[in-house]
Length: 173
Image (cartoon, rainbow, N blue to C red; front, top):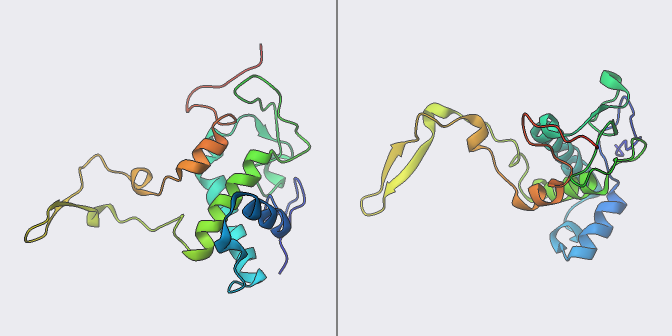
């Protein structure tokens, strides 16, 4: 089933197309995405999971509000959204940062399905504290599911200028 990339659509499931992901992969030398061992269906599925992980992981930090409210399936496009320099983000398009972030996440999901959204059982979280005669200790009680989910530095860097700090709203002067 092909990706639905309609901007603001009720059934949209991806910000970018496979062709855009391929162009981006080629531009940055991401050869795994381009390997013929993966089918377009597998790439589509990775793109959908990446989009879900992107929206789920960052929605609270995206500026502004959805253009079409609850009727739009994805978090973008948004109105009243500004970047870190105070420039308005066009509410009729998907920012390139969002597409690139989705592609980066899709590259990881293609080779390791489900890796972006692992199940976390806090009671089972442990840390290696000794190597000789291997020893594990329970993780600190301050651990939470949020602290145990993957952080993809490249995605944080790509989104850095359009994310707001939690509890802080960037407004245009």
